[in-house]
Image (tube, rainbow, N blue to C red; front, top):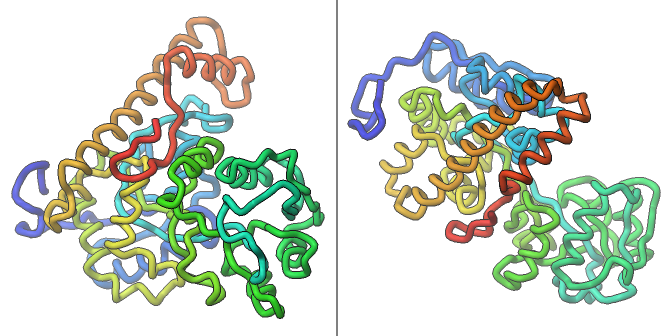
Length: 384
């Protein structure tokens, strides 16, 4: 086995374990993971590579923290909730765990669609009286628009909200001129349909370098968003900077570095063997990984660090960022353990359905100055 700071694993005859258990969430997550894991099993001709469909993210992360899976799909929003122990994650066997980044899993884009003849090209073009299509007024629906308005510097009260009653109605409202802006992924059929209308469609340009102050205001309300060029969708959208969301592969930081090194190496060096087996596999490249490293808050697993060192990518800047990210995860883990013990001493049952415990933990975080977890603006600018 390879040890940290030892000779590169590639110079040893690495012995794979008899079985690799990989956690995936939901039917699509399972299909996605099987698409490359099956190739790995065949290619290695030795270990059983088993993909385990875990029903919910809460259970996925518990399995990882318990060491029952070697690698898991990771969603940055649910992992943030887990590390901060929000709501259902605040159970005795849940809460913070020291996740480590292993590789990128997929990339999806979404953003704010306008009609092709719209005068709105960037957030700063949004003015009082702009009509925005929504499908309901719940916070999950409204927050992305509030973030966009924060970037634009326009009060929510100055907007005309067009409630279409369902998600499908929003792109149609924009295409028909009943609304100016809607939120939609560029690859969904509704957007493709709207792009074929006489006026076509575009997406609002969300390039952080155009307005750093604007993007900071956006991220204050939506701290886990990231930005990048649209790679799939109508031709009028391709290359426009919009909201992007990577999903990741992760492992517990204590998982053997040699094993994670070899998994990362296999994913990179055998990319051509699995890239066409699932649509989003095309975003599992080393370049995608480097892009994700610029902003992700998840600390990098020592095995991946070793592989990136060999590739000449890892440097002191990455190292400094990684130390900060790891320190925050460890801070949350230690604080959660201390809070649970104190709660028990006070007779408060540590249970995710117990409001008294949830309130106690939230107060504990505030009183101990635990910062909220956010995406970073770039490799050298920290968000907390």
